[in-house]
Amino acid sequence: MKSGLWLLLSIILAVLIVMRNSDPDPNMFIAGAVLPEGRHASEISQIMQEMADASQVTIQLNTVIDFETPTSYGNIGIINPSQNVFPIAMDFILNETGEVIFTSGGIMPNEFVSKARLDVELPIGVHEATAVFNAYDPDTLEHIWRSNVVLTINIGQ
Image (cartoon, rainbow, N blue to C red; front, side, top):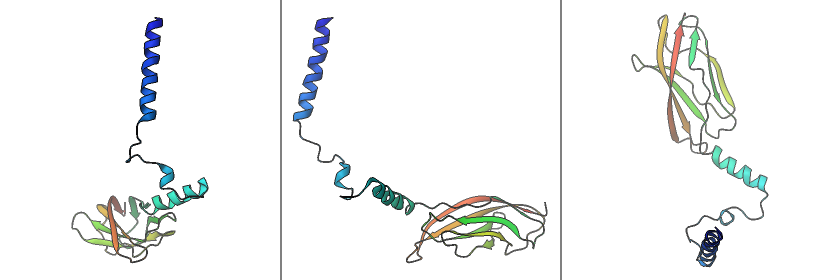
């Protein structure tokens, strides 16, 4: 048993010596090489959070929207949260026909549209639609991102 333990310790020692004497990998990531010098950890965390926020968009929307009549207001609940940096706009497209039945116009970060009427009077019933979200560069207003969400629109239900 003692010889097995010595053999194991010898192997571990040999591996450590080889690792210590080998040249570092030039492609190895060293965090200190890319982080700003003289920055406190909370500052670095804030910088990293701002970079993450600038690379994603979060949107809130009611996916089931009820309207009492074809001309009444419904609680659509579109919110562009304050952590977003992108202005957004949204269209509702009726799946049956491809017709745009609602257009939100521009919604800046920290703004919302709680209630609205549809731009088109739909017959009483349940309608499937798609909300098309569009995000825009805050400086140039160039279109940069699009995503879809399935909606159920209830008229008089």
